[in-house]
Image (cartoon, rainbow, N blue to C red; front, top):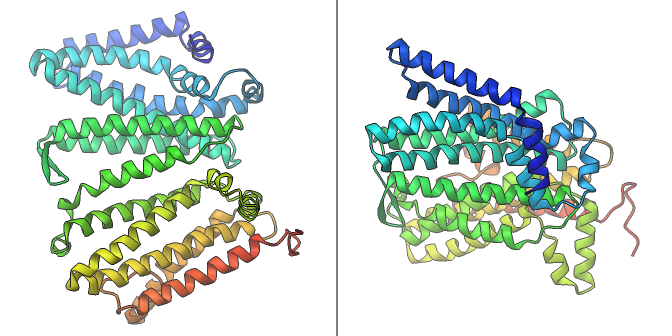
Length: 443
């Protein structure tokens, strides 16, 4: 058995705690059964499952590594012979084993009620949902904590709550979508032009995204154990997410329905790639030493080594740029769509170049600072404050200078975006070529 999992089981599943969980849940269900009110044992079990597995379980997952750092035992664990997979599984399901024990009791009550009242098929679907929402909320909390540790952030109560909050947001998103299906608000989902049963499609999506979240936890654990991650897994995720999101073209607004279906799917995939690029350039460390190493590898002709060291935001940016260029030429087949779409696509790519370069640029400035916070502040000014001032002055005609406009003033907005993008990218490359003292890096 996994040694880290077994160690957590010994720590969490003590006799006193097990008897306490069984006793409290047993008394709660007995009280609900004898009360003869609107809250029966099944309803109480449902809410207790969310509290024990999702809310408290996400906190246990967030503390699984952060707590070790606070207790000053994490360094010794990293030096052990355990691999990243053993450490990840042991932390994720070992630290939350007590929550899952209580959740299993709640599931036994509510699924028995579901099987009797709605049938075994409904109970089986509910089982997948409840297990899925528990896994994805806990894995998201663990992933958030591992990313924060990699960024050098601390382990205060507020920060642990932030990691837990990430898991709760993931759980609420899953619950909201599933609630829409259970209430029959959405019975079918059109994906790639095919109507599919909403419950089965969403459960399959939940399982797939849970697997991807676990893969992300594994890769972050590898980084924490000082191992290098190659680009293939992230490239596979980009292919998956592009294919997945592109299938929802039937859900777009009526204004875009006149576009060619292929163009709509490229637009959706490119938008998903752009969002991922923003997320990853914010989360990943922007290490100038690593960027110089990549530059040196390329100069020496070791292109494969440089590509193996590319970060996720770089690959996301490349995927966004590729999707945008393909969409630009695809729109040539539709003159009416091209007049609006082509300038918008080019402007979006220009502003994306400006924004990601800004994140890297802020990390190259001398002094001790939070570069990401500065970049976020500048982007808030560019996308919110300045446009707000312009709108107050009735100068909406200048909005194209700050973000893509629809309709765009032909290609003027695209030119303005790329002027800014090239300027910020050029300044960033110049800063990367300098030392902290502002001198060129010696050859």
